[in-house]
Amino acid sequence: MDAELFPRGRTEVAPGAVHVPDWLDPGRQRELLAACRAWARPPAGLRTVRTPGGGTMTARQVCLGWHWYPYAYARTVVDGDGAPVKPFPGWLGDLGRRAVRDALGQPATPDEGETHYDIALINFYDADARMGMHRDSDEKSDAPVVSLSLGDTCVFRFGNPETRTRPYTDVELRSGDLFVFGGPARLAYHGVPKVQPGTAPPELGLTGRLNITLRVSGL
Ligand SMILES: O=C(O)CCC(=O)C(=O)O
Image (cartoon, rainbow, N blue to C red):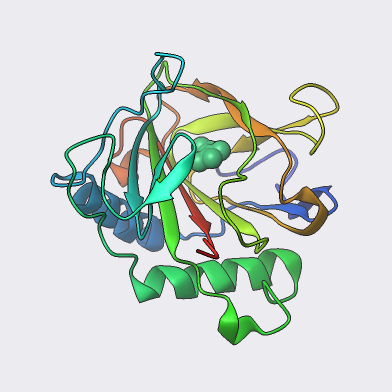
């Protein structure tokens, strides 16, 4: 948004959890959106995730590298069309390492060359989609999680590692924003209680919100 009353700056929301507004410029956002559209196509495309309790997640999802399903990883879409998961591209790993350096001011691990982002979870939110408070705890690596947002603005709730409830901080994530959480924040509960429909930058050409999270599996 132009002419902010209070310009948005880099904010440490909790130790190890950093929000960097406008990290992706409009051209990079368009490139990432085009890639997401290709990844969303079948086979192993965008799907509705069913939870063990018989419910469904309202955000629809496609995975790269490793296929996440509640609550494990596989190499094929075991809860969908059975196809092999799409590969995780090298350029996305480079983007992940750069994101960590920019957000945290340090490499993802002491030996950065060894940090191989190999999972992307891409969530698509329409106007009514939400994501409940949860921890990203199915990975064996403690490398930071990298989160990139495209399209509609959302309220991203970032909490603590102990409980789904307070204390938490609500952060507005807009198109192009980066959020990284590692170290003491790596296993913090987080979720998306609300998407603000119609707030995507018109020139992006996306109705809804996409979130791309990059993780290191350690598998
Ligand atoms: O959409 C978001 O910003 C959060 C996504 C998320 O929490 C997840 O993929 O585990």
